[in-house]
Length: 114
Image (cartoon, rainbow, N blue to C red; front, side, top):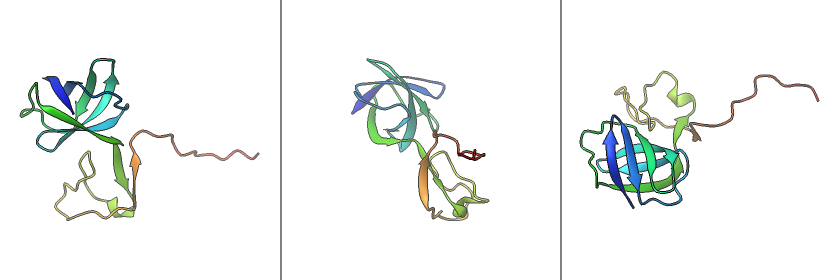
């Protein structure tokens, strides 16, 4: 468990979370999540994926031990989802085939004969 050291405009500084990975998903109070993006020896910077008005210095932060990912598949065509893949269009739950990290190598668009 770590602690929030500061909150400013959707960016949070956190201390006390050793070995956090780049783009690891962090869980804050109130079911609020953030993505670790600036990892320094004593402090981590995280971008929040929601409103920071109820978050304060001293609040606890948990690691999720997974990188930020989103659901993928045909069931998402035409749907509106939030940053964590939750439906936001009042069309019910989304069943998806798998989840993929938000940062990954692009699919090749050209195959070069070998």
